[in-house]
Image (cartoon, rainbow, N blue to C red):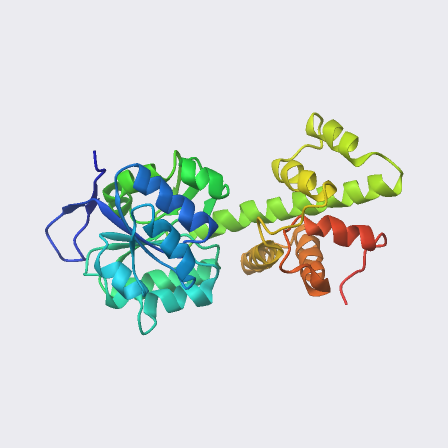
Length: 314
């Protein structure tokens, strides 16, 4: 049976309609996972990506492929933006072929990229000027969990918008966290989470590099950590790949470089500067600048192996 959700009226409107279709702009690892999830649940799915091959792969699974975000939006009752950063998001929303020009008033735009809270606030206000609702909904968990519907969604939007789109949100995730009614708070929550992920990853890479210097077997050391107080999910996941010498990009270094930088800036904007976050952000920035930007973020281990005396900020 096809799943349905509600569409709210634009401000001042009086009708509510049900929806059974969704569009995704940006169908890389996470976007493709979400698209496959919705297709498996009977939704009509429209897709668009600057990499045509990614959209074509989903067309083979039953999605409708479109060349521009505007075209994708016209045929969608609600649309999900799953691109990389604020610049791409702004172009997808308000560019010459953007979503805002294609969606009828009263429909919702779900923002999933990890971007600065002030960018979310700015986009939400501008969408409102088009009569569109904004769902601030960054995600976490990786492409496998996106396809399974078990990723985390951190949702900030008006209560009525949340209620109207709960069927869509629940289809995408069985871990929907209701953050607040203030767009931007989802982004704040995601940045807090990702800063901790970055700190944990740098910590795991540091101790594994140190263990190697001490002459310890890295696989055995990881086995111990995995069952002891030093365990972290991201440390276990990434360092298993790292000690196996697998640095093919499952999660690009540039993403955690961006996210930790944004998180530190968000903390500073709130008057907070902790002892670890800025150091983790510096490690990712230096490792990226040193040739690892397009490798997996686990390559921070390889970089620390080459820098046994940690270089401080230039």
